[in-house]
Image (cartoon, rainbow, N blue to C red):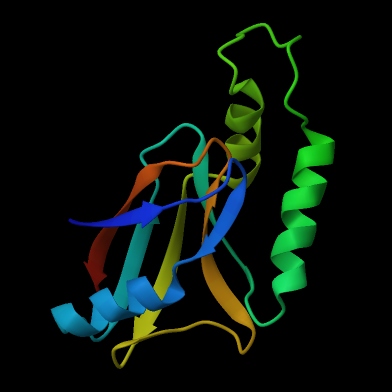
Length: 132
């Protein structure tokens, strides 16, 4: 397993990590199979979404903030309770196909690390799953 470090700058942020993951795939010489991406944090997840238009990331962040606001009436009052719920909605991992050394993403797709309790230094775990 490989570990990447992600630095987030705001409390709620989606960081495009497509280039980091593809660089790892290239550096390791992984050709055909899949990469399993995993966030070992209870307040950060991973998603695949449009990467071409930065307004998409802003819309996602804004709507998640309004859907699950940070507030004080949660049963587990650690101050980041909303971040746990947001992470559950996004999930902690994604599996991406790799063919001929390239992640197979749609034209506009990118991989985003979603931190709902930043700013922090986070880990992104990457496991290679060899194929045929």
